[in-house]
Length: 127
Image 1 (tube, one colour):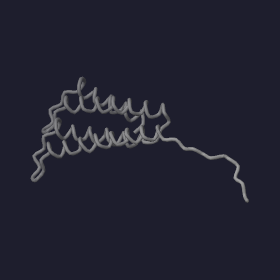
Image 2 (spheres, helix red, strand yellow; image 1 turned 180 degrees about the vertical axis):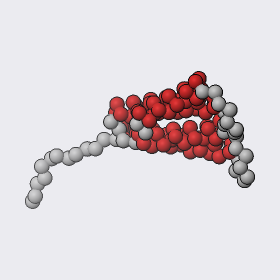
Image 3 (spheres, helix red, strand yellow; image 1 turned 90 degrees about the vertical axis):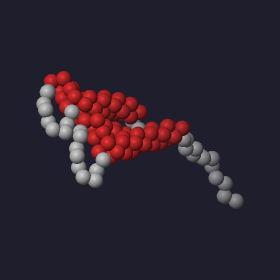
Image 4 (tube, one colour; image 1 turned 120 degrees about the horizontal axis):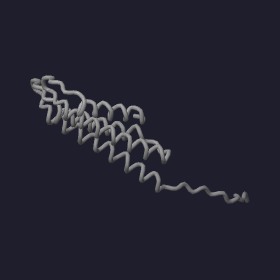
């Protein structure tokens, strides 16, 4: 996810939270807007940090943030009554999976920045 997509998330969330008042069945538009704004802000921050280091792995952080946002929407903004599906539990599972994806990416970035490659440039002698 790039900075443009993150800003679209934030703007859409702000519009849903402050500018739009719709009464859709099963959807809380204010909660959905707040979740999208938080996801957009986190995605902007992650994009800026990862691009400043020129480090790979930005898409993994964005995927994790997307999973967290989707889980939060299922848990707090949508109330679906689907048979055999508990949307609150599904939302929590998605949020945990997203948190694990973000944490794993950050840990790999930290570990990658600590590792060094040593190149031996001594002349070799052939006896």
